[in-house]
Structure formats: structure tokens, C-alpha cells
Amino acid sequence: MKVLITGTNGLLGQKLVKLYETNEGVDVIATARGANRNPFGSYTYEQMDVTVASEVVKIISKHQPDVVINTAAMTHVDQCEQDPDTCQKLNVDAVRNLIESCQETNSFVVHLSTDFIFDGEDGPYVEDDLPNPLSKYAESKLESEQLLASSGLKHAIVRTMLVYGIVHDMSRSNIILWVKKSLEKKQLIKVVNDQWRTPTLAEDLAKGCALIAEKRAEGVWHISGKDLLTPYDIAIATAEYFDLDKSLIEKADGSIFTQPAKRPAKTGFILDKARRELGFEPVSFKEGLAILKSQLENA
Ligand SMILES: NC(=O)c1ccc[n+]([C@@H]2O[C@H](COP(=O)([O-])OP(=O)(O)OC[C@H]3O[C@@H](n4cnc5c(N)ncnc54)[C@H](OP(=O)(O)O)[C@@H]3O)[C@@H](O)[C@H]2O)c1
Image (cartoon, rainbow, N blue to C red; front, side, top):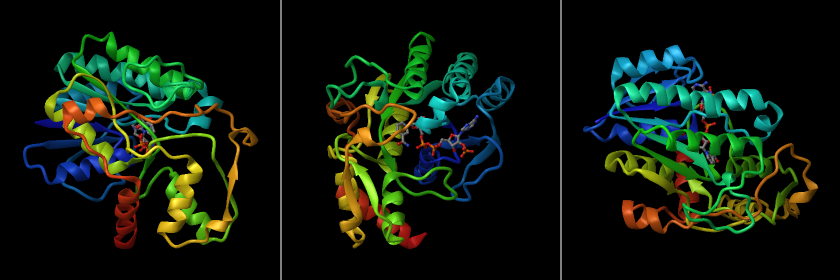
């Protein structure tokens, strides 16, 4: 099977490349904008900016992949709110570019989406619950889902949330790394205690995507961790696990933060469909912390 992955400098992109390293049955074409920042794994690298239609056509028609996994996106929720045009270009128009190229090569598309398409009034969510996006990022992701749904292509939508992990030369941090770094510097942090998520170990997300690609499992899939936690719970568990001073963590109400983009209060995913139909089983949050800790020690 030939798998082309977009955005392989990112967290999920690098984890996917790593996961496929040990699978001899899969040829990986890793693509990202600009230079390759992932020194690990064995794969073919191609520079491909997903917003440039001519590059997308050229690379996809050159490699004729069986599967395209689209991890590239504008993932910073507040930046999307402040720069909606770039968000639209990256999270919607780029998906249109991929669809048009994959229609030529008849590739199966695995596309990443988010829990933020829901309004957080009624979580945890199953795949066919009704979306109601609260931010530009969420709207753009929902629009990209709809583009694929009407494309006629065989495809899967993988919704995930609050992904944590570590890779080489990361372009953005995540909650665990932020909490750990802040507490190591003895900084007092305020952490929200009225939002709920099922945080996702990046390796689990990569596994979920690979299962879907292997089975060409069409439709919408909720792939996340299994523990429903508030960011405050996550911060306390992180402090305890890394033996840091948890008295530096202060509970906060989401309303005290003046962030440009609105966040849903309670999301979280019900994973029954992925467990039943894919055999997907994520680690617990504690097990995820242990995996991350050993990766940090070996980094
Ligand atoms: N992380 C989360 O908590 C989370 C939650 C829900 C959904 N998701 C979704 O999961 C997917 C993967 O997220 P992630 O955590 O791996 O995010 P990430 O670490 O931010 O990776 C996204 C990658 O996309 C790349 N990219 C941006 N513009 C591009 C372009 N024009 N052409 C090619 N690549 C481009 C970025 O490149 P640079 O490195 O050069 O900036 C970055 O490496 C995204 O679709 C995201 O929306 C993530």
C-alpha cells in the first residue's frame, strides 16, 4: 500500500511516519511545506504546500497513492479567528485541492477534523451527533468535512481532540508540555476547570488513522483518549506524574480568559464505534503520561 501523508512536520504527521517505519507493507510519501524537519524514519520526502493546487496535482499524480492522509491544517484556534482568510485557505481550499487530485488517482482520503465542530452543550459525543461550530476554526473544519462528503470520493473523517505528545522541532506546544515547562520554571498557572475533553496521545491518533487507512474504513470516526478530564485535572495529573509543585496550579473559570475564539464547554468522545468496528483501544491518560515521560527522557 502506498500512503501519502500531508503536513509531516507536524505532531500527527511525524507520528504516522514513525508508525509506518516498522510496516514493510507500506510505502510512505511524506509531504510538508518547506524543508523536511523530521529526521527519523524511512520514507520518500516531497515538498508540498497543500494550498498550492499545482504542487498538489504534481505530487499526487506522480506517486498515485492508494491512500492520502491529510494532517496539514491551520490548527491554532485563536489564529484562525484573527486571520479567517488564511484559515479558509488552509483548512477548506486546500482540502478542495486534495479532493480534485485524489479524484484523478482514485485515492482513499483520510481527513482530520475536530471535537470543536460541536458546541459543547451535550458532550461526550458520538459520530452522528449534530455539529454546531462556535469558532472560525471549527466552521472551517466542518466545511472541509462537508466538501469530502459531497466529493464522491471514498473517504474517512477522523475527528480528534486535545492531542498531546512530543516530536522533533515542533511548530506548536500542547497542554502537558506547557504545564511541565511552566511548573519547572516555578510559574503560577491558571487552568480551566469548567471544560471537559478526552485528551489523545498522538501515538493513539496515528494508530487510529492507520487502522482506518488499512481497512479503507469509510465514514466518520471519533478517535481520542478514553478519560474525560478538565484541563485542570490534566495539569494536576501532569504535576503529580512529573513530581512538580501542584500548588502552582490555580483553578480557573473559562470566562476569565479573553481568547479570540470561543471554546466548547464539554466535548469528549464516545469511542464505541471505533472500538467495535476498528478494534481501536487507546491508552489511559496515566499510561499516556508514562509514554511521554519515557520519550522525553530519551529525546
Ligand atoms: N492537536 C490537536 O489538539 C488537534 C485537535 C483536534 C484536531 N486536530 C487536527 O489534527 C490534525 C493534525 O494536527 P497536529 O496536532 O498534527 O497539528 P500540527 O502539529 O500543528 O501540524 C499541522 C502541520 O500542518 C502543516 N501545514 C500548515 N500549513 C501547511 C501547508 N500549507 N502545506 C502543508 N503543510 C502545512 C504545519 O506545518 P508547519 O510545521 O510548517 O507549521 C504543521 O506541521 C489537524 O488537521 C488538526 O486540525 C488536532
